[in-house]
Amino acid sequence: MDELILLLEDLSGFIWGPVMLVALLGTGVYLSLGLRFLPVRRFAAGIRYMFRGLPHDKQSGEGEITPFQALSVAVSGQIGTGNIAGVATAITLGGPGAVFWMWVTAIIGMATTYCEAVLAVRFREKDEDGRHVGGPMYYIRNGLHRRWHWLAPAFALFTACAAFGIGNTVQSNSVAAAFNKTLDTPHWLTGLILAVLVFVVIIGGVRRIAGWAERLVPVMAVVYVLGAAAILAFHAQGIFPALGTIFSAAFTGEAAGGGAAGSAIWLAIRYGVARGVFSNEAGLGSTPIAHAAARTRSPITQGLVSMMGTFIDTIIVCTMTALVILTTGALESGETGAALSSHAFSEGLPGPGGFVVSFGLVVFAFTTLLAWSYYGERAVEFLFGVKAILPYRLVWVVLVYCGAVVNLEMVWLFADVMNGFMALPNLVALLLLSPLVFRLTREFFADEGL
Image (cartoon, rainbow, N blue to C red; front, side, top):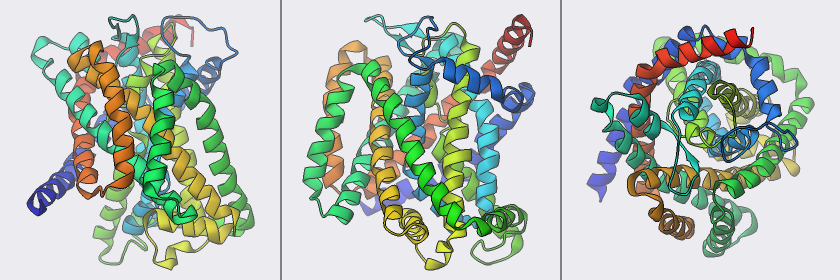
C-alpha cells in the first residue's frame, strides 16, 4: 500500500508539474492570440448573453437547459474547496505573488473555456433518450480524424475515475469533517443525510441538477463574497498594500518561504498557475460537458457565457479569499489550507466570519457533488450507453456515504492523477480544432455586424 501511495505521489507531482502547467498555460496563450484576446474584447457580450439565459428569458434553441443554468452547473463544479483551501495553499507555498499568477491563469483560461464550450455545442449529439450530450469525448470523435478517436474513450475513462474521487468522495469527506468540527456531528450521519439529498437531486437528471445549481450557486457566491467584502470594509486600509504586495511578490518572490529570489518567483508561478487551473478547471475538459446541454442557437453565444464562469471563480471568489487572508494578517498565524482561510475570516469578522467559511465549504462541496455527478454520468454513458446511467447514479450515492466515513489519502492522490490525465486528450483536441473555432468566431461577429 505504501508503495502504491508513493507511486501516486510521483505521478501527481509529474502531472501537475512544469510540463502540464506549461501545456495548459501554453494552450491558453495560443488560443488567446488566435482569438485576438476575445475574452477581454467581448467581456460585455459575455455578460449580456449570460443574463439572456435567466429563467424569465424566452430565448429558444435546441438543448436541455438555459444558458444560465448550464453556466450554473459549470460554476458548481468550478467553485469548490479550491476557492477556500486552494487559495490559502497557493499563498502559503508560493507567497502573495501566487495570486497574481492565478489571475493570469484565469484571464488566459477564459479563452480556453470559451473554445471548449464552442466545440461542445458544435459537436454535441442526441443520445438514445433524446437528450443533448457533449463534451471533449464528442468533439474528439465528431471533429477529429479517425486516428485521434482513441482519445475520446480515454478522456471518458479519466473523467469517470476523477469524478468518483475529486467530485464525490473527497467532497463528502470535506463536508463530514466540517460538520464534525463545528457541530460534533458523527461522520456517518452527515454521510447519510448528504447521500439522500444528492440522490433526490441527481435522480431527476440534468434539468433537476441545473434547477438546484441555478438557485444555490448565486446564493453561495453572494453570501461568501459579501462576507469577504464586510471584512475588507473593516480592513480597507490594508487593501491597497495587499494588492501592492501581490504585484511586487509576483516578480520578486517576496515572502515565498525564503530562499533565492529566482526559486521564490518560480514557486509563485508554479503554485499560482496550479491552484488557478485546479480551481477554474480551464483546459481540463469538465465544464464543456455542462455547456453542451445549453439551449442555444449558436455555439459562440454559449462560449461567451462559459468564459464568465472562469472569471467568477478566480477573479472574483479566489481574489476575495486572498485579500481577506492578506489584510487580516492571518498569514502570520502559521495555519495552512482551509484552516488558514477559516482563521482569516474569523479574525476579520469574529463570529459570523467562521460561519461564512463553514457555509462556503459545505455548499461549495455539495454543488460540486451535483456537477461532477453529471460529468461522470456523461462519461459513463459515452463508454457503456444509456443503460449504465441508473446503476451509475446508485453507485454515486453509495460512494457519497462512503467518502464521509473513510480515510481518503489514496483516493485524493488517485483523483488528482486522473484529474490531470483528463487534460491531455482535451488539449490535443483544442489545438487541432482551434482553426475551426477561430473561423466560427469570425463568421459569427461578422454576421452580427460587430
